[in-house]
Image 1 (cartoon, rainbow, N blue to C red):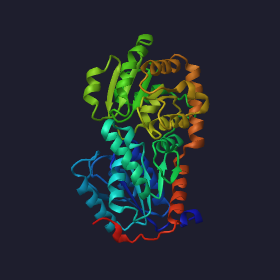
Image 2: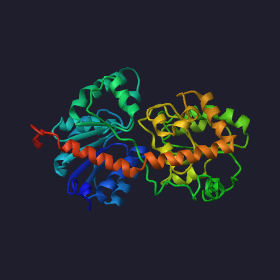
Image 3: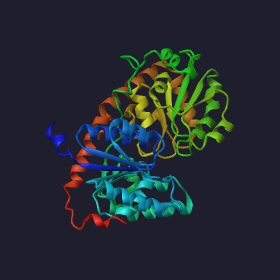
Image 4: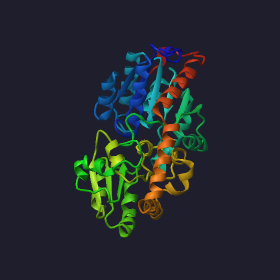
Length: 396
């Protein structure tokens, strides 16, 4: 074991999260796996359902049950009391708190009584409007005092917080992906998509020459699949054989099914998204807000070009040479369709973009680099003076 690993060996880190699916779950899983490999005792508190508890248990982490809803509501006081009891039972050296709901409950429970890293994974006040947004912003401004670091996944996410008046002790660590898993099907980014499609029952009758766009993400307002469906007729008008696949499930499924134009397939959820990226010609994510989305990084690691909207982290996650063509305004369905068509109708452009994407992710977004940077952040937090932090400051 290296000295770098040994410094955190034996440390207990408690990750607390409400999302148990999607990008947040994958970030937590990757961090936990790396921390366990380095000798850290990683414990995860989360709701008992979903992919996350299964994945981190398989990695060797201890999971404690924290029943919590996705949004604040009447159950919040109970959720705060429950997470406080969990913290006292686990006795962590450091708390790593993921997303808005866990950030709300844990910081109310601990109030700075333990070393705390809060990772918003996109700002809560961007996800709502009106009085709810104003209340979320007031909370984030106030609660920043109870985090030793506010960990953002992109400079844009940090700037958004600063511009909104959040006075955090900031750190930025870009998201990373598992390059051993998310990889092209062969040694070149333009590997045979025909075999990749044949391996997926839903695409087994789709030839390699059929233009295919894949969107991976929870079916919800944030991910913007409704905008993509409005853009799709412009694509299919130019390319009648083109197909769009939405991979994922979520609360918007019923409305999306109702409004879907011809040529759209709903694939449902999947344990492994890599085969879908490899089957695609282009991967798209038309989000309304993000911190730095994982799906485009995963797609690029599979050698696929991406089109995404200009949300936090988008421009930082793509090769600089492709930002002008591949990052489009939020909610602009015409620009979204035109960006897809540029890639779908030009095989050379598409192949070049895929090669640049692969090289970019391998250079800048290896999850091992992300995990090492988070470990350095923990060291910085634990090295801070800890006056007035008795464990009995955790709410009872």
